[in-house]
Image 1 (tube, chains in turn cyan, blue):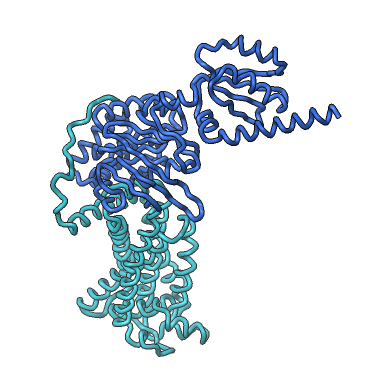
Image 2: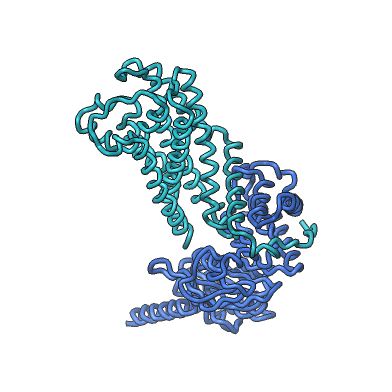
Length: 283
Length: 328
C-alpha cells in the first residue's frame, strides 16, 4: 500500500489548445469500447438483434406466410423489408436499457466528474448500438437470401436501401436514447418500448397487405410511418408492393417520404437527447 | 480550496446553508455529520457534480461553476457509492479513466498496473468488477480517483462498509498521499476517523456548520472524557445533573428515552467520588459508563444545548408541580 507512485506526467500540460473535435472523437471511442466490452462480457445482449429477428423470419416465412396472399408476388420477398424495419425499430430498446442502467448506477458520477464532454458518452452508446444494428441487417439479409428473398433493382437502389436502413437505425437509436434518459429504471424500458413499437410495427404493412384490414386500421396503417419505411425498402429492393388503399402523400412517395421522416426524427431526437441528458445529469 | 456562503436548496429544503471553508494545500479537512447533514451535498458542489444555489467555491484557484472542466482535471472524487463499471475488469476500468484523462494508451495501461499494485488489486486485475467484494470495489474506486494524480482528493465516507483492516490500510494510504502534497477533503460519521486523519474538522448538522476547529480544539470544547449516568426515573435526571455539574465545567446533556445524563468530566476526576456524591444526594443511579467522546456528544453538545436545557427545565417544573400536589 505504500509503493510510491511515479512522478506525475501531468496529462494536461499541452492540450488546452488541441482540437476539440478530435478530443470528442477520442472520448467517444473510449465510451464505444466500453459498450463493446459489455457485449463481449455478456454476448447474450446480442440475441435481440440476431436470433430474435431470425425467429421472425422463420415464423413468417414458414408458419404464417402460407396463409398471407401478396397479390402477384412472393411473400418471402415481401416479408424481408417488413422484418428489417421491425427489427431496427425494436433496436431502440438496446440503447434505452443501457443508458437507463448507467443512469441508475454510480458509474455515471465517475464520468461526470471526469473532464469529458457529455455528448461523448451518448455518442459512444450510439456507435456501439449502430454496430449491433449493422450486424442485425447482415443477419436478416443473409437469412432472407436463404429463404428465397431476392433483389430486382440495380446496385445504386440496393445501396440506397441499405443507407436508408442505416439512417433509420440511427433515428431509432436516438429515440431509444431519449427513452433511456427519461425512464426512472431500466425495467421500465421494456414496457415503454413495447407500448410504442408493437402497435406501430404490427399495424403497418410490415407483415400483411393493408387491404386485408378493417377500414379504420387501413387509415392508421396508411398514415403510419413504419408502413412508409417498409414500402421504401421494398421499392428500392424491387420487392412486391401491395396496392395502396388509402392515398396519403407519404405512402404515394415512400422513398422520398422515408428520407424526410428520417431527417426529421434525427433533427428532433439528437438535440432533445443531448438536452435531456444534460438536465438529467445536473443537480 | 475555498468556499464562501455555499448553499443548496432542493425544493423547500435547504440541504446546505452558508458553508464557509478554507483548506490549505496538503492538509486534510474532515466534514463530520450524521446522514442528511449536508456532507454529500457539499462534496457534490465542490466536485462540480451539483451547482450551488448560493455562494461560490473554488478548487485550486478555479471556480467550480465557471471553470468546472478545469476543476475536474485537478480533482479525484470517490463517491459514497463506488463508481466503477461492474461489467469490465478492474484493469479496463482504470485504463478507461486514464484514457478519459487524456493519457496515451501505453501510459494509461502502465498507470492502471501501478495503481492495481498500490491498492493490492493486482491479482484481481483481470476479474470482472461485479464479482468484487465491497472493500475491493472501494479500493478500485480510490484507484480510479488517483489515475490523474489529482491535487485535491474528495472522499465521501471512504471507510463506510470496510472491515477494520481495510480501513486501517486506507487511512495509511491517505496519510502517505497527504505527505506527498495531496489535499484531502473527506466526510465521515465517525469522530474517531476525523480525529485520526483531519487537520481541521467542520461539524455539519441539518445543513449548517455548527463547529469548526482542529480535532484537539473540538474535543476540548466538548470534553473528551465523558460520563453517562442512567437513573431509574425521569424525575431524577435534574438531581443527577446537579451532582454531575460539580465535576464538570460544561453543561450536561440529556437523553430522555434512555433516562441518561451525559457530561464531560474535569481532568483527574475519580469515578468513586462521583458514585459517592450521587448516592449521598439520593440519586438512584442504575448504570454508569465512562468513555471517550463520540459524534453523538458533539451533536448533543454543539447542536442541541437549547433542547437539553429546555428539557431539564420542563422536568424541574414537573417535579415541582408534583411536589406541590403532594404537600396540598
